Image (cartoon, rainbow, N blue to C red):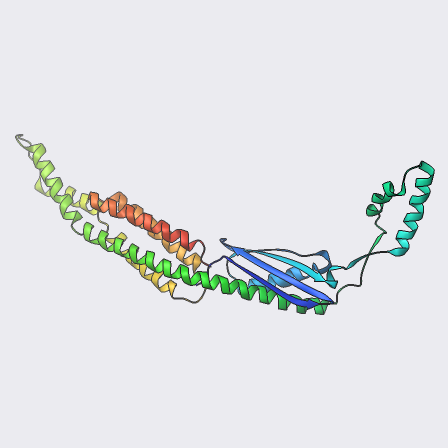
Length: 290
């Protein structure tokens, strides 16, 4: 099991310097990759995104690519253009009476002043991106696996508590139908006491049986038990399981809501509410599982 939070950094030689790749991920419903690279090596973005999509299943991944060393100085000042511009500025300074230093900021806005060094070899760039990106993803995944192991332990602990709550509910509601029937009979007897009204016993049994059937939670208990078994199995799988865990926890929440609504005993209602609180803890953890 992996979490969706992690960080990794990789580097590889490129030209006379190094290509640096930093990758950071946080939880997200699906896999989303955002990257940023200098324009000189902008073509690495789809390469690194392809690497990431081949190794990650979920999470919001942010990738930052930088250059260090000689490869970072891919833009140069043209000496010829600088000389020409300076001559022009000197003429303007002499004619206007301004100082040349006051006109120097105008140089920065000249499109002809800066030239690009020869482009980096594409094959060399792809090799560097593969090496640096792979190293960054290795570290990120290792961090996600380390955190994921802790999350699996906590999920197992919370699941055991949820199992206990389901078991308690099963015991509490096992006699619920009989109790409702008895309460209905006693209530009806109390209402009819001292009156001449005759009630068909068969109709009484039919109505009280219908009432008990509406309060029956056997199916809900069975589905909850099944979901907890499936969750336990998922915790031992070595593949992305986060979305399936979230789905099962959501379904368990629906069953718990139904139980709380149907519960006739205060103790059962309280147990159902406690189960919902436990499921919320499971949901919070599952939201960061890949």
